[in-house]
Amino acid sequence: MGRGWLWCGVILVGCGLRAGGQSAGQKAWPIRAVIVTTFEIGADTGDAPGEFQFWVEREHLDEVVEFPGGVHALRTNAAHTVLGMVSGTTLVNATASMMALGLDPRFDLTRAYFLINGIAGVDPHEASIGSAAWASYVVGDVARMIDERDAPADWPYGLFPMRATAPNPPTVPAAPWTRSNLYVLNAKLAAWAFSQTKDLRLMDDPAVASYRASFTGFPNAQRAPFVLLGDSFASDYFWHGKVLTQFAEDWVSLYTERKGKFAMTEMEDSGFMNAVERLAGMGRVDAGRVMVLRTGSNYTMERPGHTAVESLTEPYIGMKAALESAWLCGSTVLHWILGHWDVAAGTIPG
Image 1 (cartoon, one colour):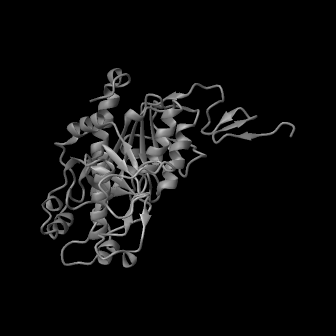
Image 2 (tube, one colour):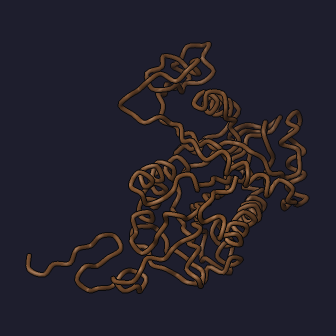
Image 3 (spheres, helix red, strand yellow):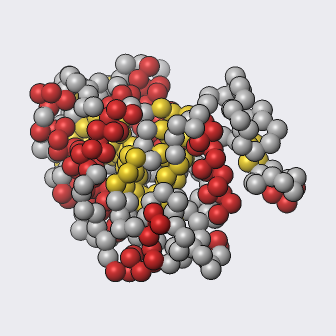
């Protein structure tokens, strides 16, 4: 081909430059923390916030770094020790963006802590809008499915594990051709993060408080926002309702062998963790340094006296509270790690 140009995601071999302006011979930045979010509404600063904006503005991620393998430019601080990423929503974007970041030769991520954070649907049995949950488990949604109208009358729902013959079996049947839905996080790190944030006063407002009060019979849903330990269920379906909330509770319990408890649902975390698992196997990242923090922007089911359709299609009354909680809890942990790097570099908290 003569003198061709080889595109390797971030390096243009032949021109001697890397995306973002680094020279090809420059040493990789030793990253200490990666802030992972999934979407931004408009600009990264100065307008209505998505998941990224508070991190950019409040953590001074002022430098823009091109990210050809992603969907949104990265951001970094002046010291080039903290990276911020917008992955794009849904599992496919989460997986692809995390792999692209992890394989990017501009960054040394071998000792980086990953803070995956963002808004989610919250189970009203476990917590309230604005609450923040640190996960010990992430569970995916690979399943068999039958329309409930075609299912036996005694089935609670139409979803069940691969190779199973009915919903909610006692154990997960072996399905050797597909990876398990379960991703186990560093529970000691999650417990430490919880200990650092459990006494924080999270944002609340009268409109959210009034909405919470309508969840009669759900005492945790009526509480002011709080921090908890609770697990994450990832699905590409934007599902909703009482029946599917029961499914998510059963599903997380099943795959964690009754050790985990469903608290938050989102559309990315199993994708992130699948990429992390592969990157760890390549020596690019340390999976023990990954934290998942999800904050409730809406409930996963309808409140008493209302329908699931009505509940699903109404505005996110708790989005601002959820975004504030994600930044407050996440930044509290981030600041400890950065402020104690002489310890955290070599020893994982907890």
